Image (tube, rainbow, N blue to C red; front, top):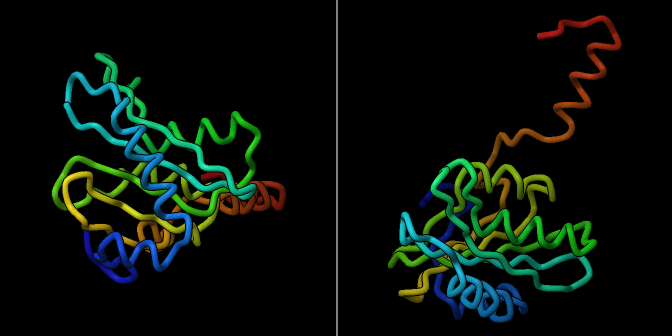
Length: 162
């Protein structure tokens, strides 16, 4: 994972950049240990920092019907929303790879619901490496609510229905 706005740093630098990094990392590591990944054996944990300062964790849960599988990031987001949280500012993801793995596309899109300035830290449970990025750098052309608003506005104005 490399590109504009995406940096490979270590945990010490991540701690320096965000005072809640350790709290989020510990929650993500704990969630990773609870992941249910009997098919891929790819155990992932995630933790989000909500607008109220709460940390909400999630893990991946696989299903034999692969489409029913849910990623750790989405589990954390859904759990935060179910707990009444309305905003998320940071997401820490932990993967079992020496080089941290990036959130998948569907997770990036769901995280985008909370804004392009969300801080993303993709960490490894096997090394000190951490990728740091803004969500907008990971998903520069996200499908936002404004896209729906624009389509609705065009439809009301008699624009194209494509």
